[in-house]
Length: 511
Length: 70
Image (cartoon, rainbow over all chains, first blue to last red; front, side, top):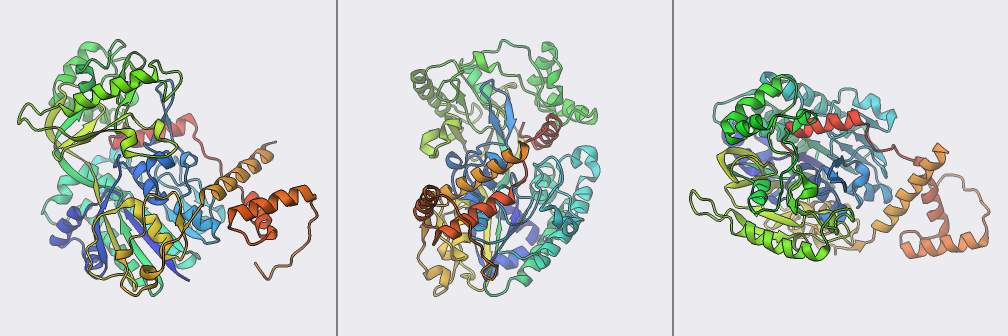
């Protein structure tokens, strides 16, 4: 029986792999690239962990699966955290469950708790507590602790050391699950790479030999080597990442730009984000801190030490008084109109007018330092996404140019200069196995293609609504996967029926 | 599964006809028995509830803040 193993390296682009390989830190991933098929994997908009992994594991864009951010915006402008039940399209392991296959899923963002699932699932870092499904599999997972970015706040100096401790337990567990559980799909995501690239990018990309952060990459690479050894005939190993990382020279504060354009009216008290959001902060203090990025950098770590979490200063946006706003965690701008929520003040026709103006404003933004155009494209949401959940996506999506990143802050100047490390739009893809077209460089591939590739390799139809297609060029000429026609099926209806049954059962249990 | 003993269950004709239509429309099942068995298995499996307490939600938000999402 065919099997597919997927190793997810959150946030890792080929650039990081190349650097670590040339410094002798890793070798197996480079071998895999030579002996397998590989390419740059286009992420999606937004290139954030939850929407990107959800798009990868469903094969559909956020307009169809509905997880555009980590949160859902409520009509009162507050944010509700998404749960695994907020994904509106079956993920690959759910499709396999419906077809009678079993899976092992470990730390896939927004996967826990499973709804339609047969196999073993270990909770991901976005679930508040460590959990194992089914509970009988607990013994197999006794060494597993999901990675936690808060370890960095508990002990910043030894963050990578703490990550390594958790990583060892995770790898030990993965090896046990790989060997002792019956599965057709093995899907494990290492989030440690993303956490470390956020905090230790320079250390990882420097040539100073070994460091605890680099040691984490070495350990994961050794696990990939182990997986390559275990990849036999009739099995496929995929190594994928949901987005990349890079260093930007400028950050564009979307809400500052909207405020300058007169679309945000600030009337309410000024507050800090983070845990301090419950405490009013005097306006003079805010003004003082927000004027200077150096001040923000100075005050941030102090607040960290006081236990208030990573401090990011911005002004609380009085959304109900504004024409438009960019909420935290959302890549884009909402117009305050009734097409999102009936309770929002602006009529639909006003939305159309405002949107044109805001797109014009964003398109005309130039960097005063060099005259560069800041955004390489500014789009209406329906030009990038399609599906039943498009109306919950921000109306305007600005795609920044190569030197620019965007955020939701409303601090100081619209364009702030300074080194900033964040996500980029290109992840990595590598395939390895006896059916793989060894040495081929794949072009034009997207993370939306990963689930169709898995299903097609396993001999199953791909979903009719899927936006991606199987990466047939990854397979050698004459192989079954390359020559077999791609078939489509409707998984959505059956999946909804299954969810309905499960809801009914829970209802009966409660009554 | 094929080796398992099968038993007969009697249901009303109208329900049977509706189920048969649904099984045919889905294109996934070769007969009504297969469809009913699938649905009942799903029903028995259940699944854990999703959703967070306010404390849990705050904990996850802290994690997201530490990565710059919030």
